[in-house]
Structure formats: structure tokens, C-alpha cells
Image (tube, rainbow over all chains, first blue to last red; front, side, top):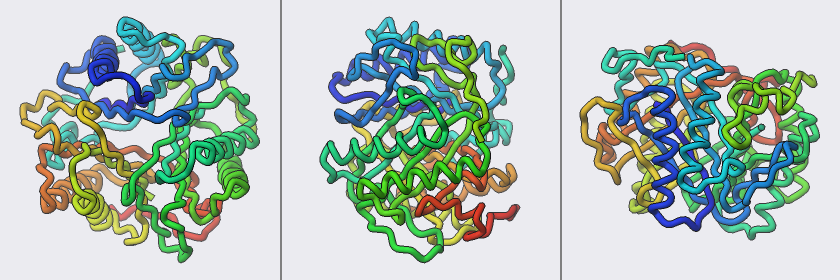
Length: 137
Length: 137
Length: 137
């Protein structure tokens, strides 16, 4: 936890894709204070036309092929301020690997501690095998 | 917002894929009264066997290769009636581009205004850069 | 319902992919007592580097290429105990088709009866065309 989906267009080499995933992870670790090894990411690379991300009327320009869609599934409990810190950290970290802030779209979805199984079909938070993340707001 | 995932089988040309994405967007805009440029869609095309969508016991026939899975992630606050209007609009709009109603599966997931960043790592609804969508039920 | 996303690495033959999807479905049917034909699954196969799933600090080893990410979207109302039974059933059923328990990651996300349309743009639970799943805890 979190489970993070990253959707991008094809065309980057494997190292650049890895750099994007790394940047997202670092941003999340930095703000949410989760362990380095609490990393669960699924990247899907898309053909032309498969990602459409306009400006929501804000009036900025996206680069089209550079767009990075990040969807964060994580446990409920973070404050709005913490979420804002996550978004800013992702923009900063991704900026450092060449992703423009205008190309970054983030959506955040919440569930509960009982909604996670990291291995073996165990519910590690419920069974006390992992500490339930508290509020670090 | 919303972020919409569309999962279909490979085999359509790029124009037909675009027509499906356009139809979904038009249906959502029509009912939810969101701006035309509030468009965030991720299409993933699948190989044979990768999408399985049966009839839930309802007794209708799907075409198998024509199935369209739509997953809508959007802000909480729409009534059941509005959701039903969305589903009907999607069926009608997709029907107009050749997707059978029997091939359409929709799932809807809700989050909050603080859960969105459209660019630059800003939380545009929280920061007042975009009006928080009200209830248009 | 549920809608289940399964993310795996490319490299398995179509029959093995099907066996994984079947195992997940059987586990869910067994515990949630849903109809056999209440099956909605989207499998996405990934290139090297596209899935990163570490151990969350638990100290076990994943096989890297064998990792199976299961994301379950379903109606709210199941108890923690029922969720735990689902995770265990998935581990057991997937184990029987060669997926190590250490390679299984599960995340569970809840929505409501009004959030589903199985076909034709109808909201079958709301319209009374399907019984709303009760609590079978």
C-alpha cells in the first residue's frame, strides 16, 4: 500500500519508464512516510490516442505524448493538506526526470486497512503483521 | 475529473477507438454538465481472453469481442438518478457508434474534491482554481 | 460485480492466463456466494519493469516475473472476516495453478449498488432486475 497505477504513452526507453516510477515512489515515501519497500506500482504504456487528458478548462498546454496519469489507491486517513503535499512532491520529483508539471494528472482513491493483502492471502494489517499506518498529517 | 478507464479488445482501427472514447465523453458531459475540456480517459486494448464479461445471470448475449468496460472515477455527490442517466446516456451514445447495449459494462467509483490534481501538482478544487462541482441532480 | 483487474507480466501462454483468471473467479464465487456468471475481469499483461511489487518490509521473496496483482472493485458491505476469506481463497486457488502465495498482491475497493450497469445502460440493482447482494458474512 499504496497501489499506484501509472499510465503513459509508449516511446520512452525502459530506463526512462523506471525513472518515472521511481520518482512517483520517492514522492509518496517522502510525504506519507511509508517504508521504502512499501512499493506497489503498475505501469501501462499506451498507443497513440489511448490517453486523452485535456486541461479541465484551466487553460494550460499539455504535451500530449508526455502525459503521465497517476492513480493512487491507498488507505483512508490522510488530510487534504497531506494529499496536497503528495501532489506537489510528485510534480517536483517527476519534474526532475523530465516530466512537465502540465503533463501530470493525479487521482486519489481511498479504502481501508482490511482491504490489503501483500502476500499469501493474509490481511497483514488486520492480522497485526504490519502496523496500520496512522495519521502523519 | 472524472477519470474514465475504457477497456476493449484489440481489433478496431484508431478512428473507431476514438469514436468510443468520444461517445463516452459526450454521454458524461451531457448528464453531469461538466466542461467539454474536463476530459481524462485511459483506453487499454486487450488480447483475446483478457476481458471476461458474462451476463450476471441476466440472460442476455454479449458479442465477446465487442465488449466495452467503462470504469468511472469521479467525485462523490451524484444521486442514483443521475448515475442512471449517465449509464443510459453512455448506452445511447455508444449505440450510435456501433457498440451494442449488451456489450456495455459500467462501474462507478467515488472520491472527493481533494483527490484530484489536474496539473503542476496543484489540487485545483481545494485551491479554488476550479469550482468544486456541485450537485446537479 | 465485482469488477476485478488482474495485472501480470507477459510470458504465460493463453491457457495459463485463463487459469489465473479462473482461479480468481472461483475464489470469489466460493466466498462471496455470487452467481457463476457474475464474472467481470480485465487482465492486463505487462512488459518487464512495468509491475513493481516489493515486500512492504515483511521480508519475503517475490519471484518478480510471477507477481499477480489483483484489484477487486465491489459493493460495500462485506465484513473484514469475509474479505480475509476472499484473500485466503484467492491464495489457495491461485496456488493450485502455480502462483506462489508470495507473488499475490490484492487490493479491495468498495462502491454501492447504484454504481453498476451490466448492460443496456440499465442500473440492474437499482431497477430491481438483479437482487442487491446482501451480507453473507
